[in-house]
Amino acid sequence: MKEALQELFIELKESYTNDSFVKLTLSKTVKKSDTLANVYIRKVIIKDEPCLQFLYRYLTNDQVKNYTLEESINELEILLTEKFKAATLFTLSNDLIVLISKKKKVSYKKTKPSLTKKPSENHDKSKERLASGKYLELLGVTDKQGNVIPKMADKYRQINKYLEIIEVQLKAVKLPKTIHIVDMGSGKGYLTFALYDYLVNKRNHKVTLTGIELRDSLVDYCNDVADKCGYSDLKFVAQPIQDYDNDKIDILIALHACDTATDDAIFKGLSAKSELIICAPCCHKQVRQQVKGKEQESPLLKYGIFKERHFEMITDTIRALIMEKHNYNTKVFEFISNEHTRKNVMLIGSKSNKKFDVDSLNKKIEELKTAYQIDEHYLESLF
Image (cartoon, rainbow, N blue to C red; front, side):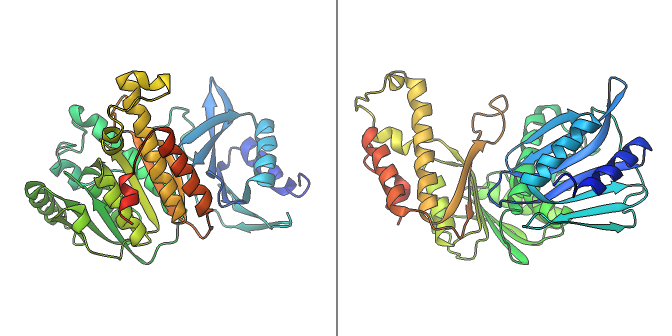
C-alpha cells in the first residue's frame, strides 16, 4: 500500500518544503459504522518549528495531534490503509485527488487549484463559530454589534456545540430534499432558531421546522422572533407533545423535555420512522418514583445523590435499548461539560437498515428492570 501512495507522499513533501501546501483532507470511511468521520490536516508553527496538525473529527468530538512530516506520512499510510477511501491534497499549484478502491487499488487525479490562499499557520487558530444571525440579538444572546453578552456566554457555547453535533449527524443519514423537523419542548427556542438558521442560511437546505411548546407566552414570543428574522418555514405551536399529530418527521428533537415528555417525543419519532432522533433528557423522575422505598442491593444506591445519577443512567439506557429494538443505531454522550449545565447527556438514534436482535434486547431490558425492581419504563407503555 505504501508504494501505491508514493505519488501522494511525494506531492505532500514537495508542497510542504516549497511552502505551497494548503491543506489535506481524508474522507469516505471504509466502514460506515466508524465513529471517525474525517481527518483535516494543516500546517502549523509550534515553537518556531513547522509541523502538520491532524484534526480527527469523530461523531461526538474532535481530537488534535501534531506530527513531523515523516510522522505524518506514516500516520497517513495507516489511515488510508485502514480507515479512509479518499484524500484530497490542496496546494497553491494544483489539487491532487486520491481514491482507493475496495481492492486497495489507488488512483489519482490532478485538477486546477481550488484554493489560492494559505490559511493561517498560527497554532492557536480560533475555532469556527457556527451560530450567527439576527435571532441571537433578538433572543438576548448578543448585542446589536454581534458581541456575545457575558452572562449568555455559556448559552452561546452550548448553541455552537449543538450545531457541531448536528453537522456530523446529518452526514450519517439519508434525508429528503425538504427536511421536516419537529422540536418537541422548544422552550425559548435558542437551539431551534440556531438549527433553522444554520441549515437554511449556511447549508442551503430546504427545511420546515415546527417547535412544540406548552406555554402560550413562549410560543407567541418565538413566532414574533421568527417573523422579524424572515424565517418563513419556522413556526411554533402551543400543545402537549403527545397531542402532536404528524407522521412526516425526518428529524425529531427533544432537548430538555422533562421526565416522560422525553419518552413521548421518542415515541413520536419512532412512530414516524424519523431518520434522526436527538434527545437531551431531563428530570428523570418516572423510574426513580417507582423504586422509592424499595431496598436496593447495590451499596452505590445507599446515597441519594448516587441513586439519582444511577437511575438517570438506567432510564436512558432502557430508552436506547427500546430505540435499538426499532432498528436505530444509538449513541449516548456528553452534550456539553458539567461546568456549563447539569443537563449534559445527549441520546441520539439514527435509522438503520440493520436488523437488531429483538429477543436479546428484550432480555437486557427485563434484566435491568428486575435488578433494580422497576415495574415498567414509561416508553414501553406507549406501544
